[in-house]
Structures are given as C-alpha cells and as structure tokens.
Amino acid sequence: MEINLIKFTKMHGLGNDYIYVNAFDYDIQDPSAASVAWSRYHTGIGSDGLVLICPSQVADFRMRMFNADGSEGKMCGNASRCIAKYVYERGLTTKTEITLETLSGIKKLQLHVDGGVVRSVTVDMGEPLLQSTQQVATPSGDLADVKISALGQEFEGKFVSMGNPHVVIFIPDMDAIELEKLGPVIENHPLFPERINTEFVQILPDGSLRMRVWERGSGITMACGTGACATGVAAFATGRCGERNLVRMQGGDLEIEWRQADGHVYMTGPAEFVFDGIIKL
Image 1 (cartoon, rainbow, N blue to C red):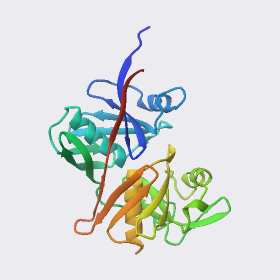
Image 2 (image 1 turned 90 degrees about the vertical axis):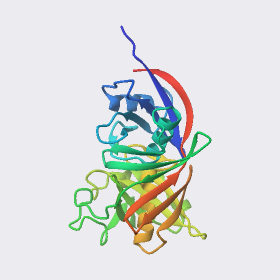
Image 3 (image 1 turned 180 degrees about the vertical axis):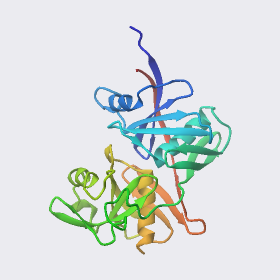
Image 4 (image 1 turned 120 degrees about the horizontal axis):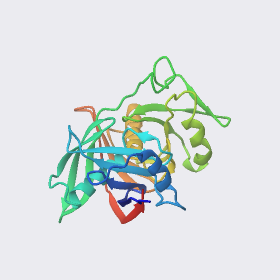
C-alpha cells in the first residue's frame, strides 16, 4: 500500500498555530479530514487547524483555511501574516507587497522586512460589516436591541463581520468570565445561524483592549486576527476608543486601525516559524 508523505510547516501568529502545506507541491484531496487528524495534539501534529498555500488565478497566492473540526473558514488574519512570512522567506516571492485570495475576498499584505526576515506584516482586511441578516437572526441583522442569553446570564454584544462573523462583548472584569463554558453556548446560539466567533473584551486603564476569544470550530485560542479587528471596530463604533487600538491577547498584541479615510481595517503583527516536518496523508 502506497503511503503519501507530506512536508508541512508549523507556524503561529501570537500563539494561533496552524499547519501550513505548500499546495504548489501537494494535492490534498480531503483537507477537511486532514485538518481534523493532524490538529489532534496527542495523535497528530497539534494545531488550531490546517492552511493550504495555493496558486491563484486572481492574486499572488490563495489561502484555504480549515479549523480543527474540519470546517473551512473564510478568513484568518493570523494565518494570512504567516503565509506572507512563509512565501517570502521560503523563496516563493521576492515581493514585499503581495495579494492573497481568500473566501472573503482578496487581501493586500505589506511585509516589513529587515535583513531578509519578515519582522511583521500589515494586512488590509477590507471594510467591516456591521449588519447581516444571513449571520444574525434579527430583522435588522445586528444586535442593537437584543441581549444574548447564555448559562443564565445576559450579555450585550456588537456584531462585526470581517469576512467571518464575530460578536464582541465588552465586560468590566475578564477574570469573571468562564470562556470555556460560555464560548460553545454562544457559538451555537440560535441568534447565529452560521455559528459565531466570540470575543470578550475589557478596556484596560491605558486604553488598550484586553481580549479573549472563542473561535468558531476551534474553541479557545491564544489569539485571533479577525477577532482583534472586530474588537477594534466594535470599540470605535461604540465610542469606547479611537480608530487606532492595541488589542492584547494571551499570545501577544496586534495593532488595529479602522481607517476612516477609506473605511478599511488594517492589522499589523508578527508571524513565526515553529518547525518543519513530514506526516502521512
């Protein structure tokens, strides 16, 4: 019986870790199943999911991202920064401005390079969406007049889509939140037909935003790029902060700017290699 061996690279953006495969070299027929198997920490590689770096007809590269449960995501900010580092440092491009095709559109990535190393990446995440009757089961498509009930508690949330849906909940004390219990309940709440990513956010004394995230399809992660963008947008939209914010997560910080001049959200942060390996397909 033939056993296909796949070369992979483990990378992380602020602790949000994925398995990256160069799909120019490999054709993975069932990436959803591969993501489930490889993401297991005890019997696989261990990760938040699988990312394929693919050829594109409309951009420099194309990203396909699969969560640890096998579901395909439309966009991942941390993964997009990792792809930028991968394609530059592994010699797939010499450009410091690249375009990336995703299921939520084409994203523009600015690579900040020093000595041949990508130190950080700024991603133009496009315009946020604050209403969606497809993703929020209310007549208005937002949460303006609705409270989210979960485990006997009620929360006020702000809906923001960054290509994938988020609900941002501002709270006074992060330590009082049991994310591991609330996360799956809110993710699967009837208000959200396509499920939802959930961010709990506390405004810190220095004005920065402390965020914890429950990601749709992956659970608690150390960081979420689109979640940080949604947090910055929600903070500005509700009058809590200005258009530039520092979002602090367990894995580290991201600079988020909702630039009013063009309406786009810009995310800047690092990406890191962890290790390379070979695994059976």
